[in-house]
Length: 370
Image (cartoon, rainbow, N blue to C red):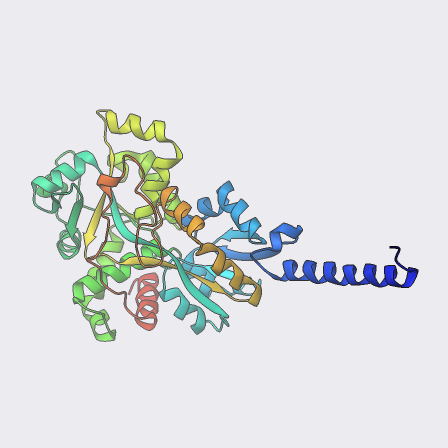
């Protein structure tokens, strides 16, 4: 049977309509957009500790399959929600490293379409095997039955604030007063959170303005003894690894940083573990605080990025390769080989940070030195 010219034309038009409709459906569906060659380009600021994760070729590919291409720029968590030069660039999203930043972003006048915690990592203290052994011997640090290291946060703050000497806490090989390094709390989230952790630990609950007045002098003393404070958690961790126990005996960082560093070069990690030199170790403050990593979608298009990053595949990569726990603080896959014994499966001894107004007052006082 042959089709008339009119019937054939109608069939072709109908097929065109169906094809166009299918294309539009694919184009507008973020899960299928990558199949059509179309992608939404999103621009935003991220904390530097997450940039290696976003640069992971597997992550880039999976996001592309979700129809998303990211152009991310590193900025301090505090800076990205407060600094007008960054806010005025009208980013599609912000990805800071603390849930407090969501409230601070609103205080800065930002309109948030959607916010969602994507990753979590606890604040930890990095030190070295020889230093930790001395601190264990002096009773300042304890080793659990599972082989993890913990330190009473209040006792540690007290030792630093009272200018106890290293030799008094079991580490005679180090000179001078016991000290710890963190990032600048007015620029970087790990320093920001350490300041909040100290205030919460000294208070024993969620601090208010009166608690800040009461304990500020102690927090200021700890920060003053640090000297120069790095603007970036990643840079501070690099200084710690390069400087060794003499230069950086203890620093404040994120749990994920050691996992990511070890996974980046397994041969190097195994060589260090088998060697006789100083080995990097992490100590869990008890209590500590979780560094939640909320993604703030400032445009409707950026909400698709939240959904993509919460998929099981991207969550598993975040933990296995980069050490980031899931939104609830859970390990989203098996612990990396050779690291399981160093990582607490579930970090339960935590305190909430002070609210945004108290934290803002705290860092402003630290910046002013008063």
